[in-house]
Length: 154
Image (cartoon, rainbow, N blue to C red; front, side, top):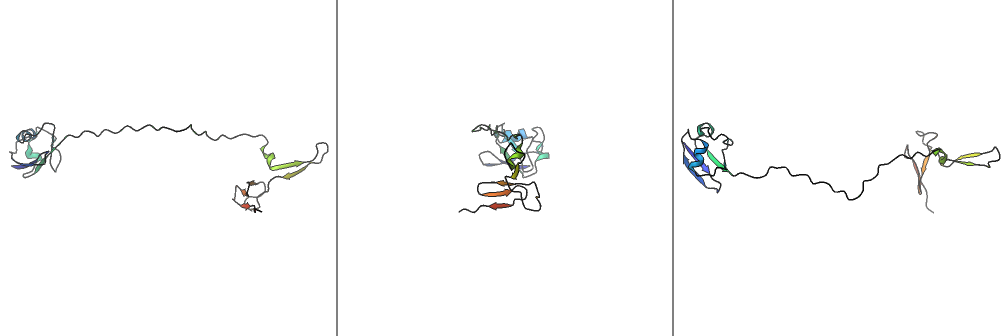
């Protein structure tokens, strides 16, 4: 049977081979190196002892493939952090925190004390009593319904 052998240098050789030839016989006939892999359009000729009649058809082209280094996965580069790690937020327990919403007026000697709200309650119907608006330098904002009053600059 007639085979075409394409070498590593790009030249094509015509080889008259018998069906009982093996891949080692074909490699010796075209004086190819032992490290090359022989392949066809159907796949790689894996077995050196299997006759070519089973793996290669009449008039097929057999290619010589050079071994390729590589295939090894690169090692991942370790991250270098520029600064210290940001600390996580910790809840601060302030005793009697609710007193910042009220102002107590009056003298300590008498029994009359006047308690007033230091911040206004949100007038929105979804919020109701007890929901105070946050005081910023240029506005007041409700944290529950996002109602905002912006102060006018004079």
